[in-house]
Length: 273
Image (cartoon, rainbow, N blue to C red; front, side, top):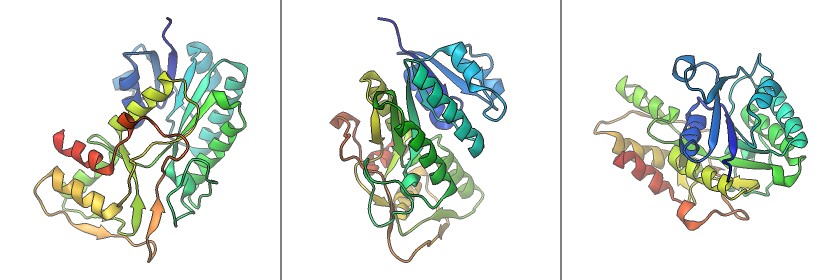
């Protein structure tokens, strides 16, 4: 059986590259890079793609993927145009798009966690961008797309953890949000879930985070305890007086038990590694 051809847009970024590493042994996997030329230019599986200046159709014609994973970052207007072109390509070709979205598509609804079929509404520019792209995909045939909504991502090489370590080393405060209730994930868990969805040809909307919720401050404190023995300075940031949720939980599209995890599992990963 011929291996599926996969193209990861944003394959040099933190999540895009983690997904590439997970999939490349199993599928004919390609990625794009923009700035990290020295690392990726010599890799025959990677193409240079600059979202603001390059035509995505040229890249798609070159690779002819059956599956596209979008982990693109960068200029918001350019992202919208690129995804509009992706939607056109998918309509004309036998191809699926897996779009990495965010819990921020619900950041206006702060009273409860959010489920797959809840209406999206966002106060943030980032959340509104993700909604705009989600809405483009929702107009496509349902067997050609998957929207993967992701909560805050941690992991040893994640930008969040790196930044926390940098603040601690410089004796700077680490920001925590005491009233924020969220669920979390890391690169390892997320890439395993994406692999499963591709393997099983799954489409639709998926909420890919821990199955339980935690206060941001408690979670960060526990991680900091695992990272080393020092007394980090915490800066508490209150955006509201009452608890607010930024959590995406699954109700309709649950993954198998072995792919479900708790926030404690994410914390443990920081110790064992």
